[in-house]
Image 1 (tube, one colour):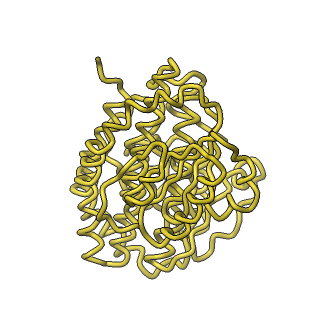
Image 2 (image 1 turned 60 degrees about the vertical axis):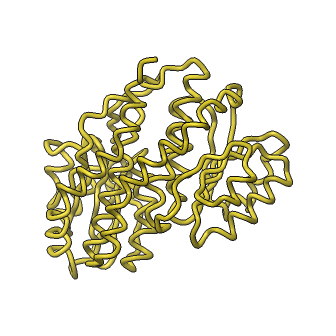
Length: 346
């Protein structure tokens, strides 16, 4: 069977992360030196997949750099023409194409207000890169499949690299360098799961649950499922889920739980037990044998990474599940109907 474009791009992710770390570490160290002491909080402008990377940054920069991270509201800069005061902010734009005018407008306004700006993008010659004081390149190569995969994980890696350099933490850098190997192992561990995805061929709705660093993973996995399979996939924090949406779960209702080991472990143990009691169909992404043993479909990731890096690997089972489910449903995973690769919003 021929390999799809999307499958090739999913499997390219370990090499992309290695390339980014090899080519960008010196640049990002210089960026960190220039930015250090010039800002007190971070504002990130992004859309879609890049917005999910920004959610990761909220936990990453908060926990490791003690920085509050706000997600920009680009419509205030464009449609409403009343941008907020960005005093003391570092303004970051994340966009794989760097083309979306509303994201560019946030950085342009930050520049007008005299604030430092940074672009994280896959295209050096793009409006976003040209609008920024500094650029972190993703080095993902041309992404031909419509659904973003390698540009998502490389965006996470770029943010992780920036966090490490701002903190000047050598141990965290060593941990980050282990990610490509963990990704590669994840592919091997997930091979048995592919043959069981047919079970979900007629799935029309599901919930995707994560928390902490992997709140971003829940959103990204839900997005991939929606884009590729037309399934209505709703992402939640495990905490928010308990405040009402848990009522949507009945016997046989599919719930994807993203639960790598870490500070969230006990919370996820309790949630999985609650969902099991409700009769949910559990798909569990985890490196915890206890979590995986309860799952109807276990989706393992390699153990050993610190929790702050697990989003780079935990998203892979979700990408592969969404791709395989699209195939089972008879859809074109490379060109989902109704979507285009570059989306420009104003």
